[in-house]
Amino acid sequence: MTTEESEMNLETIDATPSTSLRSAEERRRDLLQKLWSKYPTVEEDPSFPFNPPSQPSSASNSETIEELTLQTRLGNTDWCQCGNCLAMPTGRESLCCKEIANVKENIEEGTVCITQSPIFQSSVVNRLNTTVILTILHQSTSHAPNADDNRNLRKTSYKYFTSWIHGYLGKGNLRPIPSCAVHAVRTAFPDPEGLYVGFKYSNDYDAGEMAFEF
Image (cartoon, rainbow, N blue to C red; front, side):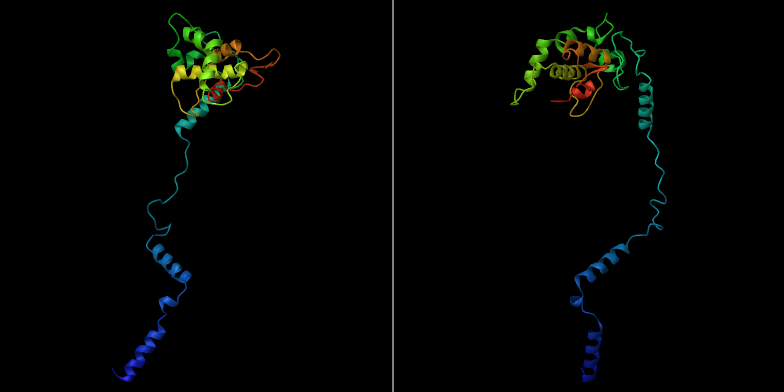
């Protein structure tokens, strides 16, 4: 190789930026550009030419209609079929035992209400039985709820009722308890005199939610 050729090669090498001399940020930017160049732009992408408008599902529509229907039950018991329901503060609680499929299946032949069932009478609203269940539920806890507190007995009764009617549901899987059953439980385990206010006892709320406490 002549001296002239050697000088030309050196000039070519010096004119090309060395990869090792480029910063990490510059190499990262070049790599990202190469990756993005492999994908089409939003305008060129045929997969989603437009965003479909969101439509309410039929399930949500039916739930809305059902809730509006239940709201018409507030302040009356026109919806009661068993004769033992009371007016409730919310539409969700304004249900009769004959309107809930699993409850209706457990109404004894010859009776008109779930509260007349022998199981309901001997277990759900029986003080001794409910007290024992409350104790069993808290065998492994250091501070069991006070069995002399009727609110704790009501919660236990709701829990027993839900397990009897629906079986195992899992955490947070609520089921409404019919008004007639709620009324029977509150009658069996009332708060001290003077604490009942309107539709509910002063420190009670939806029985279906109370059934998942403790």
